[in-house]
Image (cartoon, rainbow, N blue to C red):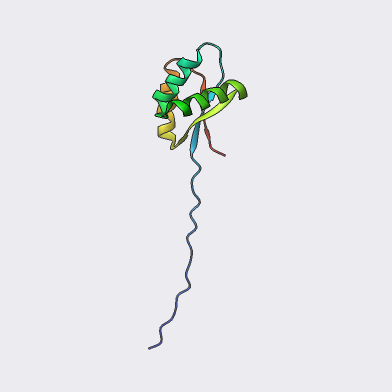
Length: 92
């Protein structure tokens, strides 16, 4: 009996875009306060937290975390504990 080859179909799964937490510049906190809170919220090291804080200061905003929505909500809440201004958006 002949074998009939079935056409292969490719399942192309579009990766879901992650979410991101945006930290906005403000003048209520010192650099050290913001750096420490970014470290607490994201778990990043001092160098990365400093870069994020400086970017927010000079550019008006900085992406401080990217990932699943649930994790972004936790990070944003931790940043907001000291009244930092943040938003959660879809990553481009």
